[in-house]
Length: 464
Length: 85
Image 1 (cartoon, one colour):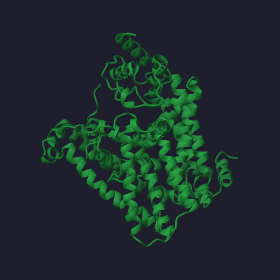
Image 2 (tube, each protein chain N blue to C red):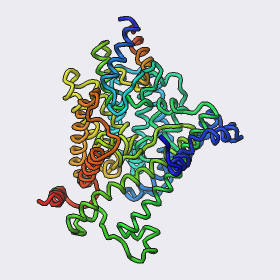
Image 3 (tube, rainbow over the protein chains, first blue to last red):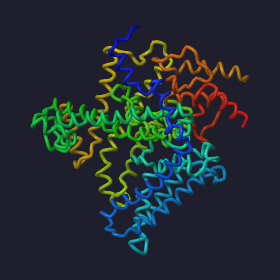
């Protein structure tokens, strides 16, 4: 079939990272030839040293608001201890077979048990001075950032692949220069080494793929500015002033949930869908920076966000929206449960694994993320932050479980209800996925209302 | 079971779990199942169950390395290692 010239031109421009002539030109350049895998890794390791220092100082600065600590000695003491713990975990991964049997069987649980023991000791406050307590708090507050990164390092050990690795092979993703959230983009050594470019040609492809993502960041941020100005009239958007107060006046979802505004029902639904689009743009822009950086350094890994709004099932959306979070949930919660629980009962096995990941794992991840109230032992604040999330995670897990079981039934059926190429059926599927995530997102926005208040306003969107 | 039989059984099984939108006409031994679109998290689970049931492989202690299931040949090598271990 002949492709229209304009479409062909668009594809050529959009797929510039696969242009062989461009790749050929780039792979001959001095920079690409000089930046061998070893040199790239050295740069990342040096950067990781600075990232470790900057990260610890930054966390301490945040902590001062809670502990009123003025001394720089706290991070100066905490950082070497933190590096020592991380090195110890590396040794555990590298010599995994020599670990006691109970650690080998449950390495992740052992690490998290250590963290909870640290927390309990902070809550009980047995330390003789405020200084010691502050160092402990900073260590505990750094744990959520490192927990999953070190978790991947231990997984590498569990799979017998860390024996021949050096500490520096892991160090650069434990304290990545591209920072990011508690979720490690690119996962750990296993995944990164498989995706690492070893030749100048492969590195050139990786660089171009990285540049493409960074260009997309600019595009998505621009789209957010437009939506902010045209849809929400957000004063933070640079374009709002240009429109001289003209906008659609649709409120952000958090204002509706919080009861600040009471728009008509139709506008509430519009706000729900627009919030989903906004969230997708936001997470795509963030994730493309991390993955773009990884690709510039030769790790040509999957995107974090890949066209989630075109997903045709709940399961597919979850995988496309925040890939590395989903992978984290799968690696640390789903698979361990799937491999151990209800092995002779297929449906129950999937249900247990999905709820372990999308409900329990998701809740636990966000519990650790709320590091300040957690370390402070402020359980009231923790409930305020995470209570509504319990319902969000339950609905998410239920949706994924149904989607997964349904997809499993369809597998292998010739001409079954598979992914459709176009038409009304595809539109309905995509609309169904949008609607599901738009609705459950009502329980995900952070606001100051109680669960019963949120439940009342939630029911009102269905006319109750 | 002979290696050749193992391979044909595995390919036959993979055909039963392939995605309806990307059916594989030919499954080459070294074809990346990820890039071909066959392996996603759901297919991975089905392959795990197949390996547990067919070869009595117990993944509980060692866990799963999805890289070991990246192609037909990789799966067969993994099976060979596990049943001789």
